[in-house]
Length: 217
Image (cartoon, rainbow, N blue to C red; front, side, top):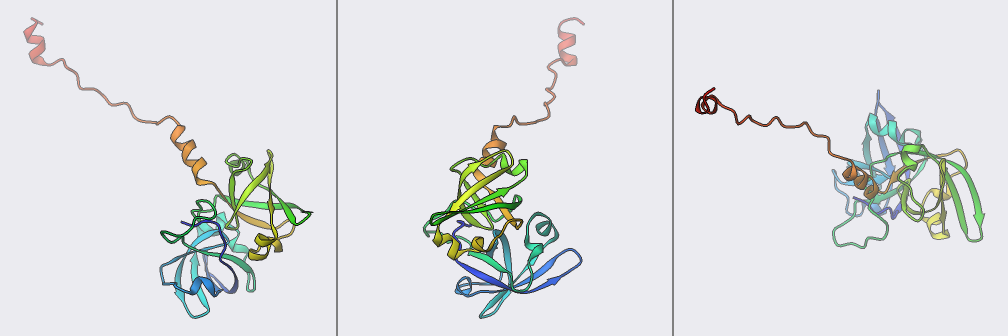
């Protein structure tokens, strides 16, 4: 479980491609302070498992399903990535509940300056947009952000200078692909409101041979 508050920007040191998977080596500092093999670290919003680590790097496998659903397949040596360790029990919850399980990707369609803030408009599929509401939460490349506006084809967020400085979002340009994770609460509510589909049970008949004989049949 994550909060969407990015701890640092890491750098892709190496990418080793398999037939349908990849092995990432990521240069980092802060997230390595207490890391152990098997720990979870969100990389651009994707929850990955640390497979090995050193004093200045960690490695993580990316399976076929993850490559299909996220932008991690576009990473190259030197690519910057947002990093966040799994939330520790008892720590402050500064963002929103982020699972690290990407719902899909979006495309940066517009960027505009608004005094100190910068607006990013992201186009996305209807299957993702249906869960996005104005003033609700969205994770973009693992960054917990508040939705400013939403339409039938896209949504917009406005970021402050601190967010720009602490994440990779300020390096994005129109046409770039980003990872999107909807607020998990909306998805659970929708699921629970759907009628349960069950197979009707066949009730045992109360008519037996004894019953028939008793009443003269």
